[in-house]
Image (cartoon, rainbow, N blue to C red; front, side, top):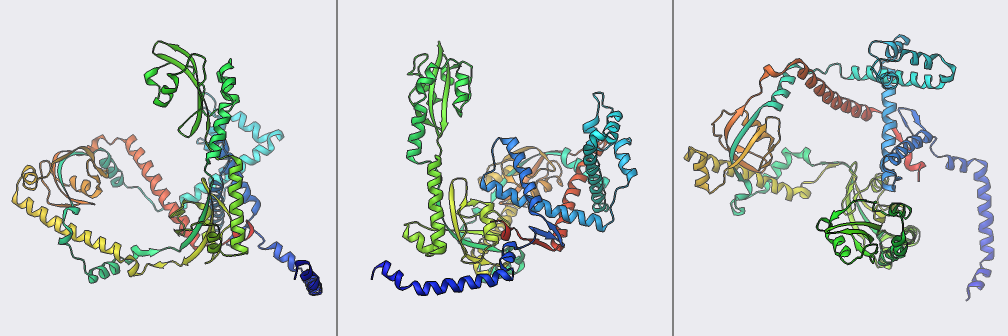
Length: 591
């Protein structure tokens, strides 16, 4: 039976289905069903019942976009936009939390305080920044003109809002950190860490030198280690995914086309009177350089091309460092040459990127609507790759870092397929294979790494015992080195607050122990990160506290207060966020 005949025979059925459908549509329309569907959530989100609008969210993203464009001259990539979308959301949430807390605490700014910030002996930074004369004094007349003139009423209002907010935040910061104090002992300790020095000789005994056959790890030891360190195996929500990718990298055809484009400029480049203007007009990725250089100082790939050119001649196209280049030799004098390089970056052309995007769109449509992710990949002869990700960490194994992929994973269920995600070098479609809730990793999953850690602990114990025996049998560092066939290493001018031991890597505990020893003293075996050590202190100079003058003391105090306050404010804000009722409707409102 032909297709048209089938359609004619099905007309009655189709007609009744359509009539029924229209009837249902009328009923749903009467009860405002579609208005409710289209309306969805009434705001982008809320913090303790206070809404966050889509408009202020977009304004914050636009602020970041403008700042990025001004700094770099480029616009956001999809990946950068995803990052700043999250940043904008966090900004607005934190803003609401801080504002609500200030209201709860009754933090306000009186008119008297505001006037003091403007006219007082210690004006606010924004006043100093905008109204300071060349001699460093404050221009009170200019301030008065701004605040009293109707011409500047809008600017005066903005200034008042900024000053009030700044003062309120200062009060909140003072409230949060009121109990935090930097003591004189803290200042002196910091001064000692920065100004105490030691020079040492040491012998290093890596734990890895213990032969594998000497170590035996039992199941009981593995289980005991797991139970004692279970918090180390606490995991956040995590995801297992599979994905396919469509490359955005330049093809051979792209390279050939860009090379032709550069080649077509050879005659115009050769006849150009002003090479600087020519390079600028042609948007060359290389800049004009009006200097002569020794031929031997020219990089090798350029030198080979230049050696075959006459003055005024332009080379054939050659590929180098991801670019299609031509070189114009403008002058040759003895061993010195002057030349200009015209170059275009080898990158995927718009048609190549569009084709990859279209292919990715097709895959996503058919995998979602017609077949399945695996079937679509198989039909196209594509190999799916697998990845793993943990909530809150934008690194996805197999893909690299991607905020966009993480945004999809955090809002997806098992089996969900993403829309096409544009990364720097590829388009990606991902499917969630598994969502694992936060909890503890089972012992069976971490048995192997725990076995390695237990083995390391045993190696450490055996190494320390062996080194202590060597120390007991030899009174000098040289004798220990000779007995074991080891090299003595030296580290000069180590600061007490340092964390890296020259020639050994990060060893903060070893450095801390060095400053408890006397000059000439030889240590017992010391437990380092990856090795045991025997150390001899050759010289040690402790910081002289009489050199800690008031100015240095104040500088250290300010630095320590800033570090401590910043840490505490971050902890306070995190705790505030954990206790808040935060609703995030972005996944429902923003496609």
